Image (cartoon, rainbow, N blue to C red; front, side, top):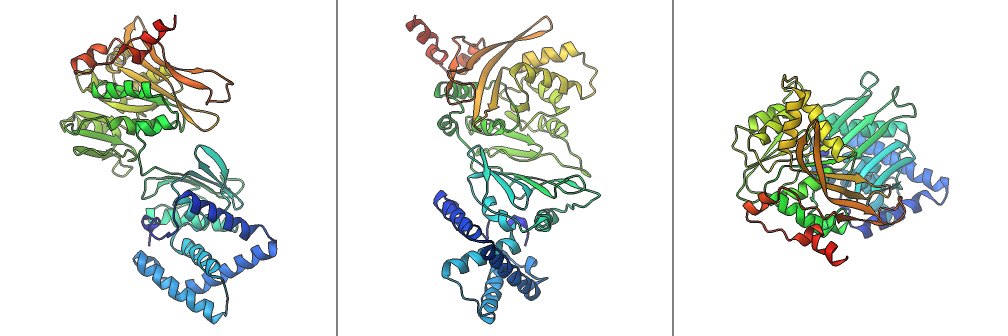
Length: 456
Protein backbone atom coordinates (compact mmCIF):
# COMPACT_ATOMS: atom_id res chain seq x y z
CA UNK A 1 0.00 0.00 0.00
CA UNK A 2 1.37 3.39 -0.98
CA UNK A 3 0.17 6.97 -0.95
CA UNK A 4 -1.13 6.53 -4.48
CA UNK A 5 -4.08 4.82 -2.82
CA UNK A 6 -4.51 7.26 0.04
CA UNK A 7 -7.57 8.95 -1.40
CA UNK A 8 -9.36 5.63 -2.01
CA UNK A 9 -9.58 4.20 1.48
CA UNK A 10 -11.12 7.16 3.27
CA UNK A 11 -14.85 6.57 3.32
CA UNK A 12 -15.75 9.88 4.89
CA UNK A 13 -17.62 12.33 2.67
CA UNK A 14 -15.82 15.55 1.77
CA UNK A 15 -18.79 17.90 1.92
CA UNK A 16 -18.99 20.80 4.32
CA UNK A 17 -21.54 19.17 6.64
CA UNK A 18 -19.37 16.08 7.12
CA UNK A 19 -16.35 18.33 7.66
CA UNK A 20 -18.18 20.22 10.40
CA UNK A 21 -19.34 16.99 12.04
CA UNK A 22 -15.80 15.60 12.00
CA UNK A 23 -14.39 18.77 13.50
CA UNK A 24 -17.09 18.78 16.19
CA UNK A 25 -16.40 15.14 17.03
CA UNK A 26 -12.65 15.79 17.25
CA UNK A 27 -13.18 18.80 19.49
CA UNK A 28 -15.41 16.75 21.77
CA UNK A 29 -12.72 14.10 21.94
CA UNK A 30 -10.02 16.61 22.81
CA UNK A 31 -11.77 19.13 25.02
CA UNK A 32 -13.48 17.45 28.05
CA UNK A 33 -10.49 16.46 30.18
CA UNK A 34 -6.89 15.38 29.71
CA UNK A 35 -7.85 11.98 31.18
CA UNK A 36 -10.35 11.28 28.39
CA UNK A 37 -7.84 12.44 25.80
CA UNK A 38 -5.13 10.21 27.25
CA UNK A 39 -7.47 7.23 27.52
CA UNK A 40 -8.45 7.47 23.85
CA UNK A 41 -4.81 7.85 22.80
CA UNK A 42 -3.74 4.89 24.93
CA UNK A 43 -6.55 2.76 23.49
CA UNK A 44 -5.55 3.63 19.93
CA UNK A 45 -1.86 2.96 20.64
CA UNK A 46 -2.68 -0.41 22.19
CA UNK A 47 -4.81 -1.50 19.24
CA UNK A 48 -2.26 -0.21 16.72
CA UNK A 49 0.50 -2.14 18.48
CA UNK A 50 -1.49 -5.37 18.38
CA UNK A 51 -2.56 -4.82 14.78
CA UNK A 52 1.04 -4.27 13.69
CA UNK A 53 2.07 -7.51 15.34
CA UNK A 54 -0.79 -9.36 13.66
CA UNK A 55 -0.63 -8.02 10.10
CA UNK A 56 2.94 -6.79 9.52
CA UNK A 57 4.89 -7.00 7.26
CA UNK A 58 2.34 -8.08 4.65
CA UNK A 59 -0.15 -5.24 5.05
CA UNK A 60 1.39 -2.71 2.68
CA UNK A 61 1.76 -5.13 -0.24
CA UNK A 62 -1.97 -5.90 -0.26
CA UNK A 63 -4.53 -4.11 -2.43
CA UNK A 64 -6.38 -1.39 -0.55
CA UNK A 65 -9.63 -3.30 -0.19
CA UNK A 66 -7.92 -6.43 1.13
CA UNK A 67 -5.76 -4.44 3.54
CA UNK A 68 -8.80 -2.65 4.92
CA UNK A 69 -10.78 -5.88 5.30
CA UNK A 70 -7.85 -7.53 7.08
CA UNK A 71 -7.56 -4.60 9.49
CA UNK A 72 -11.31 -4.65 10.12
CA UNK A 73 -11.21 -8.35 10.97
CA UNK A 74 -8.27 -7.98 13.35
CA UNK A 75 -9.76 -4.79 14.84
CA UNK A 76 -13.03 -6.56 15.69
CA UNK A 77 -11.12 -9.50 17.16
CA UNK A 78 -9.01 -7.26 19.42
CA UNK A 79 -12.06 -5.36 20.71
CA UNK A 80 -13.78 -8.65 21.51
CA UNK A 81 -10.73 -10.15 23.23
CA UNK A 82 -10.14 -6.99 25.27
CA UNK A 83 -13.86 -6.71 26.07
CA UNK A 84 -13.82 -3.08 24.88
CA UNK A 85 -17.34 -1.67 24.58
CA UNK A 86 -17.84 1.34 22.30
CA UNK A 87 -20.83 3.04 20.74
CA UNK A 88 -21.32 2.67 16.98
CA UNK A 89 -20.01 6.23 16.40
CA UNK A 90 -17.00 5.70 18.68
CA UNK A 91 -16.21 2.38 17.04
CA UNK A 92 -16.33 3.89 13.57
CA UNK A 93 -14.24 6.89 14.65
CA UNK A 94 -11.57 4.69 16.24
CA UNK A 95 -11.40 2.38 13.23
CA UNK A 96 -11.10 5.28 10.77
CA UNK A 97 -8.31 6.80 12.88
CA UNK A 98 -6.49 3.47 12.81
CA UNK A 99 -7.01 3.11 9.06
CA UNK A 100 -5.59 6.61 8.64
CA UNK A 101 -2.50 5.61 10.65
CA UNK A 102 -1.99 2.26 8.93
CA UNK A 103 -2.87 3.10 5.34
CA UNK A 104 -2.72 6.89 5.16
CA UNK A 105 -1.36 10.01 6.79
CA UNK A 106 -2.69 9.70 10.32
CA UNK A 107 -4.34 12.89 11.58
CA UNK A 108 -3.75 14.52 8.18
CA UNK A 109 -5.86 11.97 6.33
CA UNK A 110 -9.18 13.80 6.60
CA UNK A 111 -7.44 17.04 5.62
CA UNK A 112 -5.77 15.61 2.52
CA UNK A 113 -9.13 14.23 1.37
CA UNK A 114 -11.10 17.45 1.83
CA UNK A 115 -11.66 19.49 -1.33
CA UNK A 116 -11.93 22.61 0.83
CA UNK A 117 -8.36 22.38 2.16
CA UNK A 118 -5.76 23.89 -0.17
CA UNK A 119 -2.71 23.85 2.13
CA UNK A 120 -1.65 21.87 5.20
CA UNK A 121 1.05 23.38 7.42
CA UNK A 122 2.49 21.34 10.29
CA UNK A 123 4.84 23.20 12.65
CA UNK A 124 4.44 21.03 15.74
CA UNK A 125 2.34 18.20 17.21
CA UNK A 126 -0.32 20.61 18.45
CA UNK A 127 0.02 23.17 15.66
CA UNK A 128 -1.48 21.98 12.39
CA UNK A 129 -2.80 24.82 10.25
CA UNK A 130 -4.85 24.57 7.08
CA UNK A 131 -5.80 27.03 4.39
CA UNK A 132 -9.49 27.03 3.47
CA UNK A 133 -11.00 29.61 1.12
CA UNK A 134 -7.76 31.61 1.27
CA UNK A 135 -7.69 31.83 5.08
CA UNK A 136 -5.41 30.06 7.58
CA UNK A 137 -6.97 28.32 10.58
CA UNK A 138 -6.11 25.62 13.09
CA UNK A 139 -7.09 22.24 11.73
CA UNK A 140 -8.50 20.81 14.96
CA UNK A 141 -6.34 17.68 14.68
CA UNK A 142 -3.03 16.90 16.40
CA UNK A 143 -0.07 14.56 16.34
CA UNK A 144 1.00 12.67 19.45
CA UNK A 145 4.54 14.06 19.40
CA UNK A 146 7.41 14.97 17.08
CA UNK A 147 8.17 11.30 16.48
CA UNK A 148 4.63 10.89 15.16
CA UNK A 149 5.19 13.76 12.71
CA UNK A 150 8.46 12.21 11.56
CA UNK A 151 6.78 8.82 10.99
CA UNK A 152 4.15 10.50 8.86
CA UNK A 153 6.78 12.37 6.84
CA UNK A 154 8.63 9.12 6.17
CA UNK A 155 5.35 7.40 5.25
CA UNK A 156 4.92 10.08 2.57
CA UNK A 157 8.49 9.96 1.28
CA UNK A 158 9.31 6.24 1.32
CA UNK A 159 6.92 5.18 -1.49
CA UNK A 160 8.29 8.06 -3.56
CA UNK A 161 11.85 6.76 -3.28
CA UNK A 162 12.98 9.65 -1.09
CA UNK A 163 14.50 9.71 2.38
CA UNK A 164 14.95 12.30 5.07
CA UNK A 165 17.59 12.22 7.82
CA UNK A 166 20.19 14.45 9.46
CA UNK A 167 22.35 14.37 6.33
CA UNK A 168 19.35 15.22 4.13
CA UNK A 169 17.12 17.30 6.41
CA UNK A 170 15.17 19.10 3.66
CA UNK A 171 13.14 17.22 1.04
CA UNK A 172 10.73 18.22 -1.73
CA UNK A 173 8.33 15.66 -3.14
CA UNK A 174 5.07 15.30 -5.01
CA UNK A 175 2.11 13.09 -4.18
CA UNK A 176 0.24 11.00 -6.74
CA UNK A 177 -2.47 13.68 -7.02
CA UNK A 178 0.14 16.33 -7.88
CA UNK A 179 0.24 17.95 -4.43
CA UNK A 180 3.58 19.49 -3.43
CA UNK A 181 5.27 18.32 -0.23
CA UNK A 182 8.12 19.98 1.63
CA UNK A 183 9.55 18.50 4.82
CA UNK A 184 12.27 19.90 7.09
CA UNK A 185 13.63 18.16 10.19
CA UNK A 186 16.33 18.88 12.81
CA UNK A 187 19.06 20.03 12.91
CA UNK A 188 17.76 22.53 10.32
CA UNK A 189 14.27 22.78 11.86
CA UNK A 190 15.00 24.00 15.39
CA UNK A 191 11.54 23.34 16.83
CA UNK A 192 11.12 19.84 15.42
CA UNK A 193 9.89 18.34 12.13
CA UNK A 194 7.81 20.61 9.91
CA UNK A 195 5.66 19.62 6.96
CA UNK A 196 4.03 21.67 4.21
CA UNK A 197 1.56 20.20 1.73
CA UNK A 198 0.19 22.38 -1.08
CA UNK A 199 -2.81 20.79 -2.71
CA UNK A 200 -3.42 20.81 -6.46
CA UNK A 201 -7.09 21.11 -7.34
CA UNK A 202 -8.35 18.17 -9.38
CA UNK A 203 -11.29 20.25 -10.60
CA UNK A 204 -10.00 23.24 -12.62
CA UNK A 205 -11.71 26.59 -12.16
CA UNK A 206 -13.51 28.16 -15.08
CA UNK A 207 -13.54 31.89 -15.78
CA UNK A 208 -17.15 31.88 -14.59
CA UNK A 209 -16.03 30.52 -11.23
CA UNK A 210 -13.25 33.12 -11.02
CA UNK A 211 -15.84 35.83 -11.68
CA UNK A 212 -17.91 34.37 -8.85
CA UNK A 213 -14.84 34.60 -6.58
CA UNK A 214 -14.32 38.24 -7.70
CA UNK A 215 -10.90 37.44 -9.14
CA UNK A 216 -11.92 39.43 -12.21
CA UNK A 217 -15.02 41.01 -13.72
CA UNK A 218 -17.32 39.75 -16.47
CA UNK A 219 -16.01 42.48 -18.79
CA UNK A 220 -12.37 41.52 -18.20
CA UNK A 221 -13.21 37.84 -18.64
CA UNK A 222 -14.96 38.55 -21.94
CA UNK A 223 -11.93 40.50 -23.13
CA UNK A 224 -9.50 37.73 -22.16
CA UNK A 225 -11.67 35.15 -23.90
CA UNK A 226 -11.42 37.09 -27.16
CA UNK A 227 -7.65 37.46 -26.68
CA UNK A 228 -7.24 33.68 -26.46
CA UNK A 229 -9.55 33.10 -29.41
CA UNK A 230 -7.56 35.62 -31.47
CA UNK A 231 -4.37 33.67 -30.59
CA UNK A 232 -2.59 36.49 -28.80
CA UNK A 233 0.55 35.64 -26.84
CA UNK A 234 -0.26 36.04 -23.15
CA UNK A 235 1.98 36.20 -20.08
CA UNK A 236 0.38 35.83 -16.63
CA UNK A 237 2.43 37.41 -13.83
CA UNK A 238 1.94 37.43 -10.09
CA UNK A 239 3.42 36.90 -6.66
CA UNK A 240 3.46 33.69 -4.60
CA UNK A 241 0.14 31.83 -4.53
CA UNK A 242 -1.62 34.55 -6.51
CA UNK A 243 -3.58 32.17 -8.75
CA UNK A 244 -1.45 32.31 -11.91
CA UNK A 245 -1.82 28.63 -12.81
CA UNK A 246 -5.52 28.70 -11.98
CA UNK A 247 -6.08 31.57 -14.42
CA UNK A 248 -3.88 29.94 -17.06
CA UNK A 249 -5.94 26.77 -16.83
CA UNK A 250 -9.18 28.75 -17.15
CA UNK A 251 -7.93 30.62 -20.23
CA UNK A 252 -6.94 27.37 -21.94
CA UNK A 253 -10.58 26.30 -22.04
CA UNK A 254 -11.04 28.82 -24.88
CA UNK A 255 -8.61 27.04 -27.16
CA UNK A 256 -10.55 25.22 -29.87
CA UNK A 257 -10.89 21.45 -30.07
CA UNK A 258 -9.23 21.55 -33.50
CA UNK A 259 -5.96 22.92 -32.11
CA UNK A 260 -2.98 20.76 -31.22
CA UNK A 261 -1.93 21.93 -27.75
CA UNK A 262 1.41 21.04 -26.19
CA UNK A 263 1.90 21.77 -22.48
CA UNK A 264 5.33 21.95 -20.88
CA UNK A 265 5.64 21.92 -17.09
CA UNK A 266 8.11 21.20 -14.31
CA UNK A 267 5.31 19.47 -12.44
CA UNK A 268 2.10 18.59 -14.24
CA UNK A 269 -0.59 20.83 -12.75
CA UNK A 270 -2.65 21.94 -15.73
CA UNK A 271 -5.99 20.20 -16.23
CA UNK A 272 -6.82 21.01 -19.84
CA UNK A 273 -9.75 19.07 -21.24
CA UNK A 274 -9.06 19.15 -24.97
CA UNK A 275 -8.98 16.23 -27.44
CA UNK A 276 -5.64 17.07 -29.10
CA UNK A 277 -3.46 17.57 -26.04
CA UNK A 278 0.17 16.53 -25.60
CA UNK A 279 1.51 16.88 -22.05
CA UNK A 280 5.26 17.07 -21.42
CA UNK A 281 6.91 17.14 -18.00
CA UNK A 282 10.52 17.93 -17.11
CA UNK A 283 12.54 15.24 -15.36
CA UNK A 284 14.97 15.48 -12.47
CA UNK A 285 18.45 13.89 -12.52
CA UNK A 286 19.67 11.41 -13.60
CA UNK A 287 17.53 12.03 -16.71
CA UNK A 288 17.66 15.81 -16.24
CA UNK A 289 15.33 16.75 -19.07
CA UNK A 290 14.63 20.45 -18.65
CA UNK A 291 11.81 22.63 -19.90
CA UNK A 292 14.24 24.07 -22.44
CA UNK A 293 14.82 20.58 -23.85
CA UNK A 294 11.07 19.99 -23.97
CA UNK A 295 10.40 23.33 -25.68
CA UNK A 296 13.03 22.66 -28.33
CA UNK A 297 11.47 19.28 -28.99
CA UNK A 298 7.89 20.61 -28.90
CA UNK A 299 8.68 22.94 -31.80
CA UNK A 300 9.25 19.81 -33.91
CA UNK A 301 5.85 18.38 -32.92
CA UNK A 302 3.65 20.73 -34.98
CA UNK A 303 2.06 22.65 -32.11
CA UNK A 304 -0.83 25.03 -32.70
CA UNK A 305 -0.32 26.33 -29.17
CA UNK A 306 2.55 26.13 -26.71
CA UNK A 307 1.48 26.34 -23.08
CA UNK A 308 4.39 26.64 -20.62
CA UNK A 309 3.31 26.19 -17.00
CA UNK A 310 5.89 28.67 -15.71
CA UNK A 311 8.89 30.43 -17.21
CA UNK A 312 11.72 30.06 -14.68
CA UNK A 313 15.02 29.97 -16.53
CA UNK A 314 16.78 29.64 -19.85
CA UNK A 315 13.68 28.18 -21.54
CA UNK A 316 12.56 31.82 -21.82
CA UNK A 317 14.75 32.41 -24.88
CA UNK A 318 13.33 29.42 -26.79
CA UNK A 319 9.78 30.48 -25.92
CA UNK A 320 10.43 34.06 -27.08
CA UNK A 321 12.04 32.96 -30.32
CA UNK A 322 9.18 30.56 -31.04
CA UNK A 323 6.61 33.36 -30.71
CA UNK A 324 8.83 35.77 -32.62
CA UNK A 325 8.77 33.48 -35.67
CA UNK A 326 5.02 32.95 -35.64
CA UNK A 327 4.10 30.49 -32.88
CA UNK A 328 1.00 32.50 -31.97
CA UNK A 329 -1.44 31.75 -29.18
CA UNK A 330 1.23 30.82 -26.64
CA UNK A 331 0.52 31.25 -22.94
CA UNK A 332 2.67 31.05 -19.82
CA UNK A 333 3.09 32.34 -16.27
CA UNK A 334 5.96 34.03 -14.51
CA UNK A 335 6.74 35.14 -10.95
CA UNK A 336 6.77 38.94 -10.87
CA UNK A 337 5.40 41.80 -8.80
CA UNK A 338 4.21 44.02 -11.64
CA UNK A 339 3.77 44.15 -15.40
CA UNK A 340 7.07 46.01 -15.79
CA UNK A 341 8.82 43.52 -13.52
CA UNK A 342 7.43 40.62 -15.57
CA UNK A 343 8.90 41.95 -18.81
CA UNK A 344 12.26 42.66 -17.15
CA UNK A 345 12.42 39.19 -15.61
CA UNK A 346 11.52 37.55 -18.92
CA UNK A 347 14.38 39.43 -20.57
CA UNK A 348 16.77 38.50 -17.74
CA UNK A 349 15.87 34.80 -17.92
CA UNK A 350 16.34 34.76 -21.68
CA UNK A 351 19.90 35.97 -21.07
CA UNK A 352 20.46 33.10 -18.61
CA UNK A 353 20.70 30.73 -21.58
CA UNK A 354 24.26 31.88 -22.24
CA UNK A 355 23.22 33.30 -25.59
CA UNK A 356 25.44 35.73 -27.45
CA UNK A 357 22.35 37.63 -28.64
CA UNK A 358 22.76 41.26 -27.48
CA UNK A 359 20.51 42.52 -24.72
CA UNK A 360 18.76 45.07 -26.93
CA UNK A 361 17.83 42.33 -29.40
CA UNK A 362 16.33 40.20 -26.64
CA UNK A 363 14.40 43.22 -25.37
CA UNK A 364 13.09 43.79 -28.88
CA UNK A 365 12.00 40.15 -29.04
CA UNK A 366 10.14 40.52 -25.74
CA UNK A 367 8.38 43.60 -27.08
CA UNK A 368 7.44 41.93 -30.36
CA UNK A 369 6.49 38.51 -28.97
CA UNK A 370 4.26 39.31 -25.98
CA UNK A 371 0.87 40.86 -26.71
CA UNK A 372 -0.68 40.92 -23.24
CA UNK A 373 0.43 40.78 -19.60
CA UNK A 374 -2.07 39.89 -16.87
CA UNK A 375 -0.96 40.75 -13.34
CA UNK A 376 -2.50 39.03 -10.30
CA UNK A 377 -1.99 39.58 -6.58
CA UNK A 378 -2.94 37.67 -3.47
CA UNK A 379 -4.70 40.09 -1.12
CA UNK A 380 -4.43 40.36 2.66
CA UNK A 381 -7.80 38.69 3.06
CA UNK A 382 -6.55 35.65 1.09
CA UNK A 383 -8.43 36.46 -2.11
CA UNK A 384 -6.77 36.53 -5.51
CA UNK A 385 -7.33 39.52 -7.76
CA UNK A 386 -6.42 40.48 -11.30
CA UNK A 387 -4.79 43.87 -10.68
CA UNK A 388 -3.92 44.84 -14.22
CA UNK A 389 -4.35 43.74 -17.84
CA UNK A 390 -1.84 45.51 -20.08
CA UNK A 391 -1.03 45.54 -23.76
CA UNK A 392 2.66 45.33 -24.69
CA UNK A 393 2.94 47.93 -27.44
CA UNK A 394 6.43 48.66 -28.74
CA UNK A 395 10.06 49.32 -27.98
CA UNK A 396 10.87 53.02 -27.78
CA UNK A 397 14.57 53.50 -27.26
CA UNK A 398 15.48 51.16 -24.40
CA UNK A 399 11.97 51.09 -22.93
CA UNK A 400 9.18 48.63 -23.66
CA UNK A 401 5.96 50.64 -23.66
CA UNK A 402 2.75 49.20 -22.27
CA UNK A 403 -0.83 50.41 -21.94
CA UNK A 404 -3.24 49.31 -19.24
CA UNK A 405 -6.55 48.10 -20.66
CA UNK A 406 -8.01 47.14 -17.26
CA UNK A 407 -6.88 48.40 -13.85
CA UNK A 408 -7.96 47.46 -10.32
CA UNK A 409 -9.24 50.58 -8.60
CA UNK A 410 -9.56 50.69 -4.82
CA UNK A 411 -12.78 52.27 -3.59
CA UNK A 412 -12.39 51.69 0.14
CA UNK A 413 -9.85 50.89 2.85
CA UNK A 414 -6.65 49.44 1.41
CA UNK A 415 -6.82 46.41 3.65
CA UNK A 416 -10.20 45.43 2.20
CA UNK A 417 -9.86 43.94 -1.28
CA UNK A 418 -13.65 43.68 -1.47
CA UNK A 419 -13.85 47.49 -1.81
CA UNK A 420 -12.36 47.63 -5.26
CA UNK A 421 -13.09 46.61 -8.83
CA UNK A 422 -11.23 45.85 -12.04
CA UNK A 423 -12.20 48.72 -14.32
CA UNK A 424 -11.62 49.38 -18.03
CA UNK A 425 -9.31 52.35 -18.56
CA UNK A 426 -11.01 53.56 -21.74
CA UNK A 427 -8.05 52.59 -23.95
CA UNK A 428 -8.53 50.30 -26.93
CA UNK A 429 -5.54 48.02 -27.53
CA UNK A 430 -3.58 48.40 -30.75
CA UNK A 431 -3.82 44.65 -31.36
CA UNK A 432 -7.54 44.98 -32.15
CA UNK A 433 -6.67 44.32 -35.80
CA UNK A 434 -5.71 40.76 -34.83
CA UNK A 435 -9.18 40.23 -33.39
CA UNK A 436 -10.81 41.64 -36.51
CA UNK A 437 -8.61 39.39 -38.67
CA UNK A 438 -9.85 36.42 -36.63
CA UNK A 439 -13.45 37.49 -37.23
CA UNK A 440 -13.97 38.54 -33.61
CA UNK A 441 -16.02 41.65 -32.93
CA UNK A 442 -15.30 43.42 -29.64
CA UNK A 443 -17.75 46.21 -28.74
CA UNK A 444 -16.16 49.51 -27.62
CA UNK A 445 -18.28 49.39 -24.46
CA UNK A 446 -16.13 46.50 -23.24
CA UNK A 447 -13.31 49.01 -22.81
CA UNK A 448 -15.58 51.54 -21.13
CA UNK A 449 -15.39 53.94 -24.08
CA UNK A 450 -19.11 54.48 -24.57
CA UNK A 451 -19.69 54.43 -20.82
CA UNK A 452 -17.18 57.24 -20.24
CA UNK A 453 -18.87 59.43 -22.83
CA UNK A 454 -22.32 58.82 -21.38
CA UNK A 455 -21.11 59.79 -17.91
CA UNK A 456 -19.78 63.19 -19.02
